[in-house]
Image 1: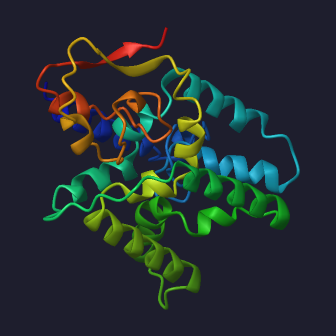
Image 2: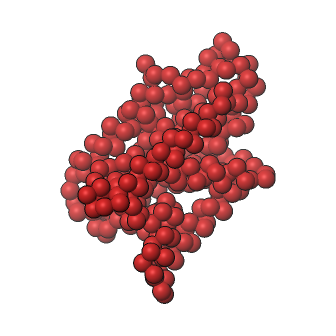
Length: 255
C-alpha cells in the first residue's frame, strides 16, 4: 500500500486552498483545520488557534472558534495533521533528508502543556502570545513578509520568528516531526478527540504478527501497536499501513 502520493496531493491541495486570498473578498475569515497564520500574504482562512487566543484574550467565550475546532476534531481527529497541514508537509519533506533517525521517547503531555500555557498567556495578556513564536507563522508569514514589505532593518519580532523556525527545522532534520510530537497546541486539541473521531486506523489482530514494522516507520514515535489510531500522537498518516507486510492496518470508521 503506497499512500505517499495521495498524501502529498492532499497536502498540496491544502496549501493551495489556504492561499486563495488573492483579493480581500477571498479572505474569508473562516477557521481552517491547520496552523496557518492570518498574516500569510495570501491567507484565505483564519488560524483556529490564533482565533481561539483572540477571543480568550478579550475575555469572551470562543464559541465560533471552539465550535469549529469541535467539528473538525470529532470528524477526523489528527488526520488533518498528516494529510492537510502545510507545516506538517514541510516536516515530512525535510524528514526525508535525515541520514540517521533518532528515536526519542514520546511525551504526549508536552503538547497539552503548550496548549494550556498558550491559552493562559492569551488570557493574562489579552494578546495572541503563541502567534509570536509559531513556526508555521514564521515560515509562511514572517519570512515572506521580509521581502514583500521590504523590512529593513528586520524587526525584533521577525527575528524571534526566524530563530524559532530555525530551531524547529533543525529538530525536524534530526528527529522528524518534532513540532507535531511535542509542541503543537492544535495537535493537542485534535489528538484529544482521536479516540472518538469519525475516522481512525485499526489493526487486525488476526493478521498482525508482531513484527513492529509499523512502529519502526512511525514519524510520531508511537511505541505500542494498540495505540495506532487512538493515541493523541497518531496523525493517521498511514506510514504504518505502508510498512505492514500483512496489510493488517487500515483506515476505518470509528464505530
